[in-house]
Image (cartoon, rainbow, N blue to C red):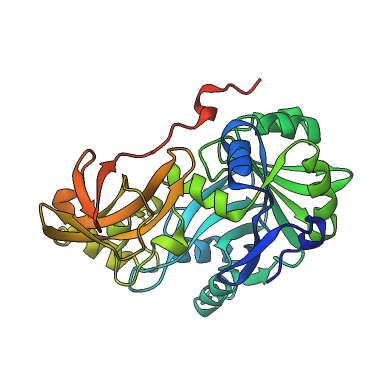
Length: 354
């Protein structure tokens, strides 16, 4: 799936494949794009995210069954994150659930829209309407400590101060859009769901206020605050507890797909845990062994060069007794230190919305 905004991007844009989506990886330099996210306001092409509408009689019951978090009382003025699991408790996708008057939108992770759609259709015992709206609607994002100012100048100043996970139906240039306070990087974050035919114009107008940032820098900024990047973190056989994604599951729900496997993981023997690390001169490859005093205790899940730390930063999955911050471990031939998240402090935490 190509970005519907590709023609609006400059010729020097570097595109790449993220699962089923072709997305802009870089618009300029990583340093410039990262500075926009962490110090100013960055504009994100999120057209690689799928958008699936669930509606009709039984839509809430169906959503309750396929989503791992409780959405029974989700209104059209709210959104929330949840996991979608299969029967074995493995992660199918991480989604943002947007409440709608007659149902809800499920926003997939980048490039997983078709996989999510097929999973929903397979489990549609209620006979609800499941429609892929990705061709009709496009998602744009704004992130950064001053993203709220862009929202105020571009659309409406009152929208900038929406509470986190609040949703509003509004208009821009006479076009109906769905606006949400969300975020990927722990900076102030907003998403705009806009008709595809109007997306390029909204992108161009947003460029007057914000710097475009590509998918590469976005994923780095996400890791720095331990926002899950599902495509890197989900490994075969790892439970949601081992992956560190159990905060996206409500085990008190009476029933949802994968619940039995999740409960078994919660109640079973202590396994591995995922935590952050930094150190060394180079970025280790996934699967690199992790040692403690010469003992093999786990492996690298994935790692990047953090622009905020100016050092390698990554996740390791290790035996539970070693899941603590401040430990000195060996990754490959480098000595690293385990960290507590977030691994950098977002500037937005000290910048008020005015």
